[in-house]
Length: 639
Image (cartoon, rainbow, N blue to C red; front, side, top):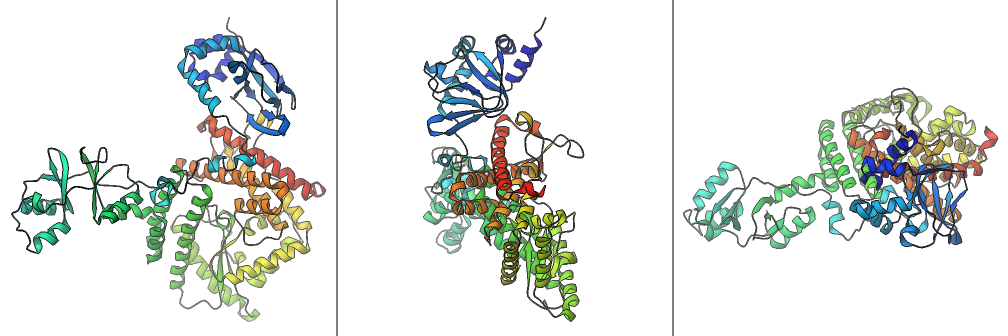
């Protein structure tokens, strides 16, 4: 008769290395000897200095914290599928850390005497254990390991040519090589180049590149009369050939061409003239590659004469974003560049829309990006959130002025929709009279929200208060910001309402730290990354920065970095929140690009263990920052 408990243990373990390297029969034999342990929150598994147990442990449910007790520092948090307590047994040493249940946990205690033979006989298991011991996971929230969360896991070295922005995309080259021998006449070479529509001919000897003839050579050496058209290739070719390997970065290619004052590079198998040519790279190829360079994209956007022309350039922006993610460029830098490109697109749409108007704007105005776009966190195309703010006018001129700007706003929102920004389902757009107002009207509206903060008013604040100036009169925007902050200072109870709202988003995890998924509707059984993980961090940053009366910072991680400066006692938590917000945005962007959607709803089945682990580690910060604002703003008084 089969042991159903052992079968369940084996089914669990086979999903995780090194147990995944065992055969099913081996895994089942091992599982029959495994003991299941239940640990309450705070209970000890083993202590520093204690002799090793006869078992090592695997976390089935919950989380085990490994503490360096003398320094009161959490070194690591082990969760589902993680092994701990094995090193002292292998090394024949005492435990060097305390292992304590971070929450209610279930563990599998695996007898070391039974496991050792597998580790000795199975090379994959042995290698895995060696690598694990050599690369201990550290506490991602500690000051010592800043920047090691999901958002900035790559070691970005600005001095490394492979990480520079121009090197993000590899150059594209022509592998359709046309070649002739050294004895071929220039006349025949010119005819072949014309037939094939190419600007360079490779000259080979015994299958290896020895020279190149370009259009420039034909102009400078043949058309001038210095050589006749019947001379052979050897007499006018440029030699030796400048060669590089095919894995060439854009910057390297540009530098090579400038250094040698040439327009073509030959790419060979090993980068030398001693191996076969695989392709030819021209200045034209480089210009095509530069199409995904930020500076070139901005120039292309500014040169457009219609909104239709902007749409294909947006594809270049998305290609650039994918390149940055592939190269693990830090999210803080990626978001700045993509946001600048998004702003450039919006500014051009506004400029083109102004050209459609019959007359100039009656007064100065400013275009406000709101929500994620206002925070410079809109990496993918989501819906529009915007407003138009215009200067004060006489009461008799107000509606006429508003009509002008509503017409302009309609042109703009239609243009944004054409280039990929969906219309806001809640109509929170400048084409709606509610979001097309004079300065005094916006001041009256926001004052009403702050002085009478009901649920709807607070919700509107969470979107509107993240606005950012995109186009037009910046002084108008600064005037509105100053008014809002002054009003908040006079009515501090508003911050408690805003903090209470920030706690409305449910926790990312439930019992045993399981992801809480949607229970019904279109996205049933998926994890809402935005609502459960990202928005709690965004909302907390907003209320905290408002409480310090800091203007001009709308980006979430920049808000936390500023808060870390303002409150040194909470520096570590705020920096952890900064890293977590970048991590979650990077994760959402990857998911969105992979699945061609907004990346908001995640199918947990599509995630591997490492991705789930990294997400769960960011959730720790969500819980801690919510606890901080709950205490600071005494939200219990409003419940």
